[in-house]
Image (cartoon, rainbow, N blue to C red; front, side, top):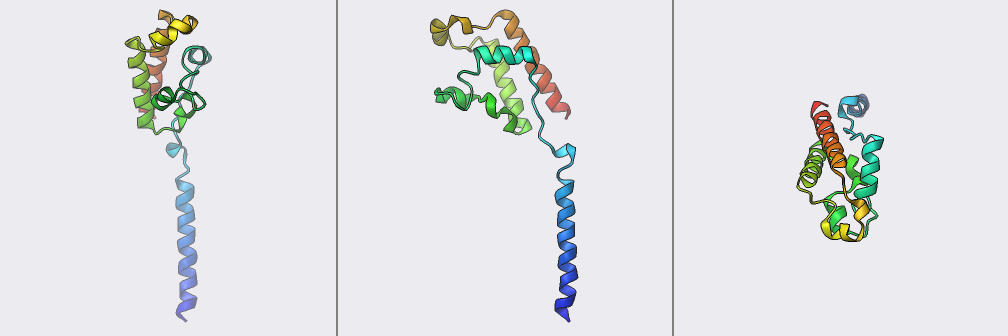
Length: 130
């Protein structure tokens, strides 16, 4: 007799777990995505992505920042990465001077620096609002 009562209780438990799983997929729990306008992407592709991506041979650079995996970070980690990007650009640390000796065409112009800094500020604000 107890086995018969146990079956409905287990069934009810499975149904409740299923409802919780569906509820956890609501839009408010989705990852916050960083958007990258085409003009920003163009600058990053030219001056940053070569070193700061998963496939780079520069282990230090890809450990510091990997644009390919940026959206996989938590919102807090994304905010930290964006802050690091802004500070690095403001302090003229990237691209590194030694790298620019061999590839001067990768240098960021003042307009490109301002574009990236404004993008970082906009994305940081958007992440904080979500």
